[in-house]
Length: 115
Image 1 (cartoon, helix red, strand yellow):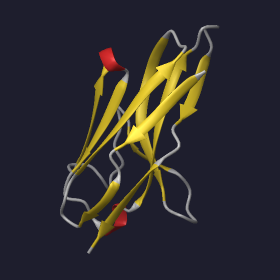
Image 2 (image 1 turned 45 degrees about the horizontal axis):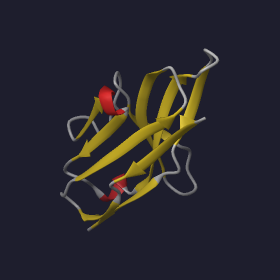
Image 3 (image 1 turned 180 degrees about the horizontal axis):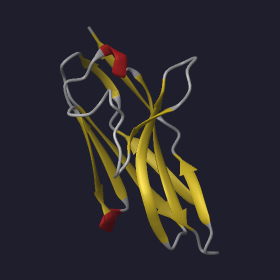
């Protein structure tokens, strides 16, 4: 089993910055990918950033980085806009102890951007 624990969400004014963190722990052989998605109530969950792709709406403002030694992924969010308000979910694709490709999600962290 793999646990993803997110932190760093909160309330920020428009134009401000936040940094989200997500640490993976548990039993796995390797992590193939980590990234961030977000969901606004009533809407579908959407991709924010992976190591190979950013949503058009966040390009130039958000930066994803990984610390492989700590099994941690970060999302630096700058120039935040009200439309960035959402619950942000960490995602990881791992190879588990049985050599299976498995997807895991964190519980989510709320980001609220005020005017």
